[in-house]
Length: 462
Length: 139
Ligand code: B12
Image (cartoon, rainbow over all chains, first blue to last red):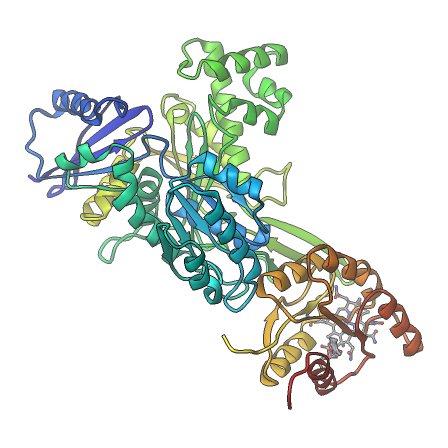
């Protein structure tokens, strides 16, 4: 037996998971309140104490942690054209597990720069221009950042012909130059920037957020929690050399403040003669809807879906829905303890999923030409993805997971949105996915085996 | 990066004629240009976005299916708006329906702000010569 402790320092809860890496078995999991204000180890100790009530006393051979505590990894990005390098910058940041507070496009103004400093990002990602392309924007933005102050590190990943000059402009600041996120028009190259972001997270952010005390005890805080989750999803989809994965998938994590969607899929068109438009899509993609969440961002769900739709889905009168939603927005730790609240939460979770997956998925447009129909696809075609992984309190603590999750699927009312036609539903009942992402860094076989074993198959959602 | 001039090319509107576009891509590349090919069914906004990021020297618009005049309207104004003042704009292919006297067609496209408009059947070499002249490329 080789017991390993996996820790997820969340903003509210510190979750701990124990596995036996030799036998590839889950030993237990527990959670306690995160104590980042005082000493983060208190919350950890509490969680471990709860864990050992289940597992008995364990001598952990290794301990690994991920963290989204103290706000997670908060980033701001700037690019040139909104749909091109600014989007690439956002995409790179999200894929590195960051929370993107704001993305700017075109030239930053002095007011923008002041706003950026006041938002105190953990990292700023400065991009713009293809290699050999536009320099003016990124140089201007470097000047604006240099003039505005602040002490956040800046990652430069824009036009390589302007990168060194940006570095000079920002002399005295903590600056890292890496490859352009869009070296050529229409080519995404986000991994080098993501790698740099992860390194900075490890070397600097963990310390700055008072998490170092914890890292003395554990073998290291390896990554931001979303990054761990993403690693787990990619492993689950793709497998390892000796063990096959389950194939292309979508995962949805419905939280209190945001709804995250992950897709591990090439997303290519299946109708012959379809033309692909817009930025190329990364195979591993993460999007975060900051306005879609079960409590802090509850109003965003209602805005996107309409109060009537939520009333219809929950069987609660519209006026009452509005009243309850307003209440929940300010009582963010309220659990659905009554049948009425449970029905409302289910409807809200369904529409949170629909809104977030619709924004994540691509669209197909029918173009009528004099010849007849032609198709243009933007974003990923997820219609043929057949696995859907769901997590988050509102999906785990209910018997109606399948009904709620089916909101992720193709909707005949919105036929141009390329969501899955049907999918096998896998539920993260035990909240282990971030832990498995951590484990996958050192024990990918065990992590994959445990995920296949522990994810609850809820059958086909149609 | 070299001092190559950068062109953004593509077929505008809902036009799917793909063959000429591929020929132009190869011809321009062989002639020493850096070419960003947006393919077919390209909107004005897509040309402009690509030209901004790549700091392009010219946008070469193709239109084959007859709706060129409609599709090209307002393109110069949008370029100006996007900070691409003075960028070289060409259009060619079968830019209008049927057989109309080309000098009149040319006049209309020039009034729309295109630097040059080419009649049907213009060989790539003619376009390349014009580009080299307008962009002051030697040889
Ligand atoms: C093949 C073809 C199709 C195929 C296209 C397949 C594909 N995906 O590529 C299909 C069947 C889909 C098609 C459909 C249509 N087509 Co069609 N098609 C043709 C055809 C027979 C050949 C086109 C071709 O590939 N030529 C070979 C290439 C190498 O030449 P090119 O495209 O002209 O490009 C060269 C030059 O024009 C020039 N050039 C191009 N762009 C530019 C730009 C600049 C700045 C310069 C200087 C030069 C330049 O350089 C290129 C390389 O040498 C032509 C007739 C013809 N013989 O040209 C009709 C033709 C273009 N089609 C025509 C029409 C009307 C249509 C349809 C609207 C309806 C229909 N009845 O078929 C639809 C439109 C569909 C759509 N949404 O675009 C008309 C256009 C009439 C007009 N403009 O007045 C043509 C001219 C036939 C005709 N005589 O009526 N078509």
